Image 1 (cartoon, rainbow, N blue to C red):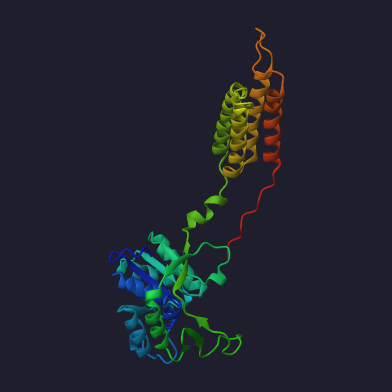
Image 2: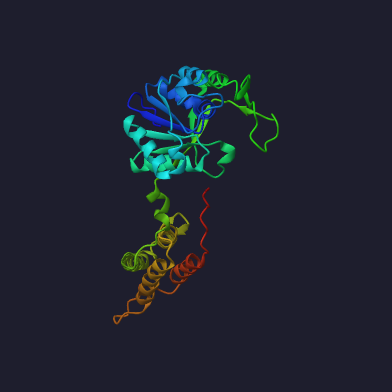
Length: 335
């Protein structure tokens, strides 16, 4: 829901009339105010509506008319109730007909959620799900400012007297859901609505697909070469110093150790493959060892002393810690 004006056409999917007013009424009103097209698709008829579609319901006409919506539809029944593919096809047809640029889910029906999401992703359309902050802990939500549309949202909710009782900015269901406490605390309508953007299937599973043997071997080879390069550069530069008055700063050693730490820790964090990190460490430490040996001409690149000792011990310690550090398990997503 980019809200970029008349170029947007957003399809809202809800279980039954009344849900659109309570859950997404602010976003609908704001989109309409910005010139975007909005279509609302319902999965079930409301109580008291005996017509074939929601156009026969005065409540729906009043609520959606107040939000600025003139196009709302009801999914065909009962065929869609027994065939998930038929349900997906119905949603796909609506998306195509209205030339939707985004889809918003306000439904708790898992079957309808799956059908609408599959249809949108197949069409390359982004999907947003209405979420309450309390029910989406740990998820990155998109907050939409609907403070200018609060009164229109409340009026739309008030248009459903058979479903909601409105007192000020507090909305209480007339008939509490089964198993819920009778007419207890209600929902406070505020100036913000929150949404979660659902990633497409390939993005959801990309991190779960392990790299193939060829890709892993290439990554290991590159890591080894980079480790050798860091070993050469660090060995050459670790003796460099800067004199500031009475203080001599081993700037070369500091930069060399910082570079080694960044290399190994970065590989572990980004690649997550201990073998790749191990090959980089072998290239690094092997190069340092070879260059620390006295050459046939008697020259020494790693002379005795504190800087030389730290340069030979420090990278080994860093490599050991990075390789031994346990894997941090990823956060579990919601079902």
